[in-house]
Length: 106
Image (cartoon, rainbow, N blue to C red; front, side):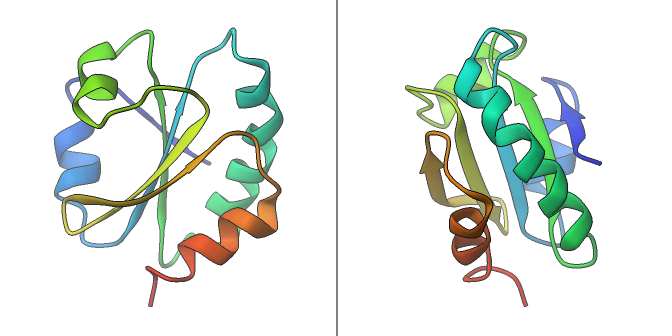
């Protein structure tokens, strides 16, 4: 299950994580965000040992979204060692997300 992020836990959960993190930048009113959500949840289960999966509602944490250049949602950000190393923009199939995250997990 994806971890819900906010202003108070983002640094600890994402930037200080010992393993790569997939952050789903989303909003409840965003239809493409809802389309990609099941794939994100499936990935959180499938890669639980090697990848942390989190969700950040951009309406609730606009400063974080701005900090990482989120211009359109859904945006899936891949963080490794505290850095945003890659991103996927738009509703894409699960296999596309998995192909991208496999580049960053051990």
